[in-house]
Amino acid sequence: MTQLPAGFAGRVVAWQRSHGRNALPWQDTRDPYRVWLSEIMLQQTQVAVVLGHYQPFLDRFGDVAALAAAPLDEVLGLWSGLGYYSRARNLHACAQAVVERHAGAFPRTALELQALPGIGPSTAAAISSFCFGERAAILDGNVKRVLGRVLAYGEDLSSAANERALWDMARELLPTRQLHEAMPRYTQGVMDIGATVCLPRNPMCLLCPVVEICEAARQGRPEAYPVKTRKLRRSAQSLWLLHAQAGDGLVWLQKRPAPGVWGGLYCLPVFASRQALEQALPAAAPLRDAPPFVHVLTHKDLHLHPVAAQLPAQWGGMEGGWFGPGEWPRLGLPAPVRRLLENS
Image 1 (cartoon, helix red, strand yellow):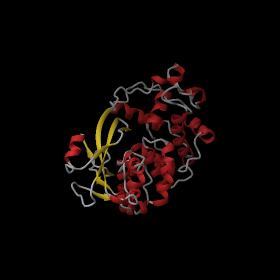
Image 2 (cartoon, rainbow, N blue to C red):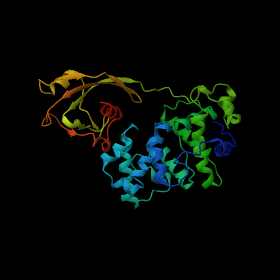
Image 3 (spheres, helix red, strand yellow):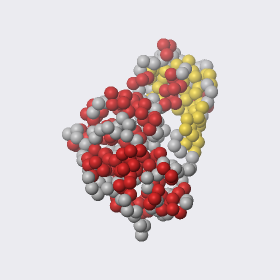
Image 4 (cartoon, rainbow, N blue to C red):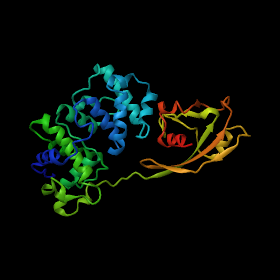
């Protein structure tokens, strides 16, 4: 059985108070709506990107009731640029569930929070610990790395059973006293250590507040942990985008099916080949190929080939409709499509 180090939580709490991140806009609050929003935005998204979207989102949807009442298209529009649009759909569904099931008040325990759409165990624990001081453990990627190294936990985290064992140890390491104050600092602190000190490559062990009780540092091989053998392979896909235009800046847009790439968003019509794109248009339509570019997703590279076509405003040869520049800001558009339209 892995030996748990004494004093881990106290070191993390003390370090977070003096050296952790304390100036982010979602930290000076115990409002579960704001904390929940930041946690969803921060999933697989860098803090710098979230900072550009968090306040505009709050300015439009100041509380959970406003978000629940909003049209999904408007929510997706403000989400544009954050990626992983299923998060925005789940965010909207979760807001509606909070209003309908809980009269607009977020549940106070991680167990209840996990029953809401789009909230997994780690996000639920973050909300309940930050807002309500609940003794609940998070285990996102950064925290797995910190705990995996401190404990020199050498079991393969590709196995669900091994990950559950690490969850159990994470719970045992939590603070036990003054939880209302300690739990928010501990939760933030262990994330901060993973994000700023205990890096995947070249960790800054000399600056780490838990280096003296870190078994991986004692072994002199922190990068050996955590262990995860199964890796997702990157793939690539080529897509042709029909940039059909009419007078007055009108552009033909379709709503993408969900699930799938850009599911639920408005988009230029997408085709698997240039030939398929040509066949969808009138034979006499002049086409102009724009420079292709690559849009990088987490595990896939999209090679995008825009093809411009000038069509009459009365054309209606496929599903979708004409939208003018004044309407684009209110639509949920994939980030590369929005940039393409704004720069054309």
